[in-house]
Length: 466
Image (tube, rainbow, N blue to C red; front, side, top):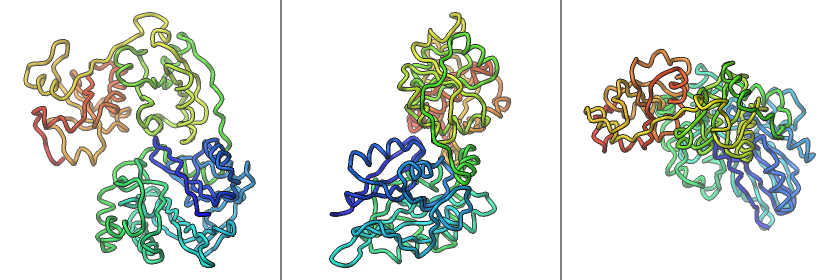
């Protein structure tokens, strides 16, 4: 039968894993740490997992590959040149791995995202010969872009960018235009140099659309390095965990905290994170908490903002939401939250004075307030704070705004000028997180809960360059 490839998306991190099979045996490529999703899928399809494959030692999440291989008895394919602290099946450039009478893998060295990165061509048997169905490219050739080359340190970024260019060209030269491209990164992941522009692709499409296959090496390297922005601080811990060999996860419920316990944790300087939507947080929340709703990339921003290892308590409306957050957090190595609490915000306060509101507005309201005609109930802005990333700021920002990217804000609260702060980002999600940090520091703050594209339409003067 024809090869079946199922995408297992982890949208919160912008990554994809894959289960590929011939209907009987299957391989899993770049699995996330919560492997129950994969085991369920394989069981539903009646597929026995015989091989687990890593394209590289990941920098943006903790892999589930080792645990999945242990549970299923599958062979665990990892680059022979990667020095790891666990047993694996070492593979290298040119190796051919038989999977069944119908499928095989060919290993291709594609350094660039990392020094030892591998891609895997999935061949299917057709008429007595082998035909490439697709290629698992990990962080090498992505949809319309490539994996970033600076995650192993800025000193390697230039050399790895040259490798990335050569690797992409090698894949394009080796494979027919109709070959499917199955990348791991590129769907919001900070491992991608830019973001995917399509839900699927082929080698032929990438030849037409991807700069790495259209630019000369030096031009590609220059453009790639110029476009890189900061990446999450927790990445520093992911490669270490994946090299050592991650432990199995524990997703059982964590300890419940009552109102008194929450107050103690906040007083002790621990992180108490409110997972509700930002509008619910604005209406009423426990003073001292931080807003990171489950409707956005909660784990990415939390892992980036915290001091690694600090106790984290989760607040949500339902136990199911806490469970979802636990699942997201184990993917980046935050294994066990310190505590949880669910229900209405009123249940989390030991006394009414501990509940706080957060004022929200939009860009037309900011324009009016700047013109001296603030809407009723809203204070005039002394400071407009932009917490978007540097590349977003450079592409255009409000004249006179102060720029502090959200990941830098916990350490730069003193850099925000005195007075009432109106804070914005690209949508409102990061701005609400920033506002909660500012309010916890005693600042008067208003959240601009609006799409940044509305700023110019609202009549706010814009600056095109930093």
